[in-house]
Amino acid sequence: MTNLEAIMTNVSGAHGVVLTENHFVKTLLDVGVNPTAEYSKNPLIDKATVALYDVIIAGANLKEGDLSYSIDINALKKIRDSFAEKLGEKTKNDEVRGISIW
Image (tube, rainbow, N blue to C red):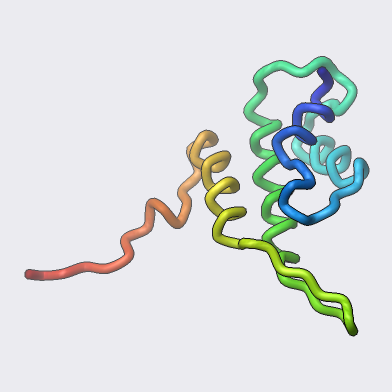
């Protein structure tokens, strides 16, 4: 399996958003991963996965003319955050949501 095949497995079309192979290749190259190299556990692939989920989340609810689609942003954010947490990034799950003095 190549790095390209690995990231395409991480971000499948099951979310209702179609990404082309070019999206995956560019994202891998942007983080410094060779798309055609043999896959090995590389945290940069997870970093690229987070970047792709950011793209999907940003365009999750689109409407143009008679065409519109919407996907579950909360589900996407949970998946995105699970990859981000593996990389040691802070996510909204780490934020304080409220403080009570009682």
